[in-house]
Image (cartoon, rainbow, N blue to C red; front, side, top):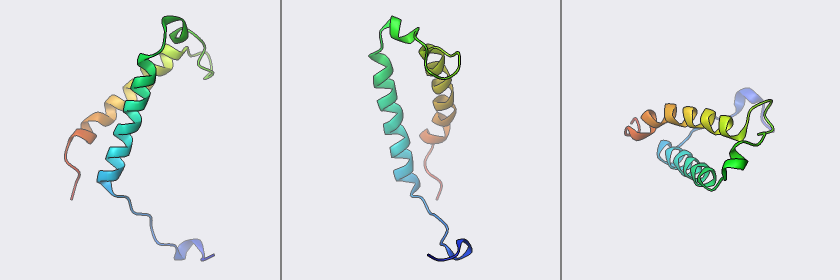
Length: 75
């Protein structure tokens, strides 16, 4: 295996990355829409957060990404 300094830097296709992030967000949104109120009130397994609080936190993060994802990819 080559030394770490000899590795080629990773490169990412912004179009494929954008599509993957949007697809994942759509899957999460679909799963959240299927949750019943009692499931939203249940513990999330993340500290003291309920599932609803975790969903709100994820939504905030996705909304923050939204503006960057709706703009065209940089050249």
